[in-house]
Image 1 (cartoon, helix red, strand yellow):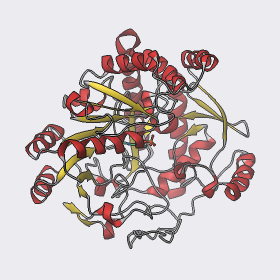
Image 2: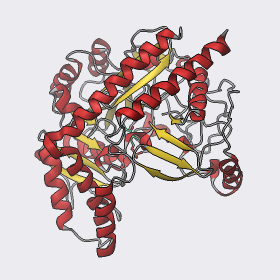
Image 3: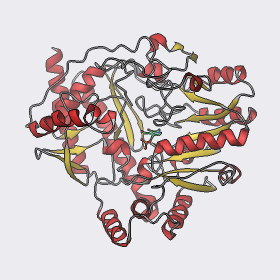
Amino acid sequence: MSNPATSTSNSTTSPSPVTSTALPQGSETVSRTVGRRTRKTTTSGALYDEARALIPGGCSSILRWSSYEPYPLYVKAADGPRLTDVDNNEYLDYLLCYGALINGHSHPKMVQALKEQAEKGSMFGTPTELEVKVARKFKQMVPTADMVIFGSNGTDATSNAIRIARAATGKDTVLKFEGHYHGQHDYAMISVEAPPSVAGLEDYPRPLPYSAGIPSLVLDTVIVSPWNNLRAFERIMKRHRNEVAAIIMEPIMSNSTVIPPGPDYLKSVKEIAAQNDALLIFDEVVTGFRVAPGGAQEMYGVTPDLSTWGKALGGGVPISAVAGKKEYMELIGPGKVSYGGTYFANPLVLAGALANLEILSANDNLAFKVIKDLTNRLMSELSRIADRSGQDICVQGVPGMFALTFTKLKKMINYRESLLIDWNKYKLLAQILLDHGVYLHPDNYERITVSTAHTEKDIELTLAAFEDAFRELRDRDN
Ligand SMILES: Cc1ncc(COP(=O)(O)O)c(C=O)c1O
């Protein structure tokens, strides 16, 4: 996740704050002059020019244009693991809509389910049987959750989970981890990509806004801990004894490269949360239905009080969920915790999500084995290819997703370490790969993800593309 407003890796200058909270000093950015296209992509360029006059930035999500130089590609169609841009170039897609497309694009079973539901009606504003079916399927795959409730995107899920935790504990403060991203609401947009020069001590980071316009009062209710540092976390919890309502984390950090938790880290955090009467929230928006059928909580055997889900839950349709222990989930209701949204759990997305989960869980969850094998192969072969071409890279990940970074570090364990990477080289790699028909997000903080639609043949093509790209990078270095 990289925001042009605060990123240390971006050439855009900070906007002037229009409300109470200014962006931190030190947000000034380094110049990026990487810009290279050899395929014909002029239709994208022309669309971008027109779009910027109509839509701020040129499209409706900052990440879809920031880091893309000289302009983002406009995509007109996609099928399986492939995207086709408006100039008819094809790419093997490893962004997969930030990991949402766990079964690739336009899976025939999902297309069928969506078509059938569209004919029956896309929105009723009433409960539906489909909602019960998706909840039942969710519980089968995530047995650690007692109950589940749906929303439209990850931001809905994390904001509601935090509200439930506050209602449950009667406290206000939220503890989040430096470098973790939980969506676009104010309580989440803190210390996501804090410039280290102003981010305070490594073991006691200063909460910093990740956007202009966040009220300073919000900053007073969010505290920040470094990831994977139990001692620091314990000290911070002691310092804020009796204040913390919710501890929210990505159980596998995946918005600042991919950084798994250390051994027993999640278990220890859970114990400390319980000692402090704080609810533990796992934000499984990225990990859910990607790393294992039951998410990171299944993979690590640690059950949080609440968890939030999105992306691969829908596999391409906009649905999210809050799930967790009955005693907390049942706080939702009139006169208690408010919850709702016009488009929440509409039958069209429910039909798509149900088909997606059925594909994932078929044949005893075979999809997760396929994805794990593809990820392992890509990770190990890429390390080997990079080594051969003399590149210092770190390939770090878990089943379904990984990060490839240019760095001398062999392993990264927290946000501050994740900053020690060569951003521009990665961006250049992503641009070279476009010429070879491979699509990655040029922002190195965005994960490389695979889907069940990728085949061994696709992996071969991808490895060959990387081999050529690494060679080109080496020639440029020399
Ligand atoms: C871990 C995590 N949580 C929450 C969100 C927010 O999800 P959405 O973009 O659907 O609002 C994201 C989005 O990337 C995420 O990565």
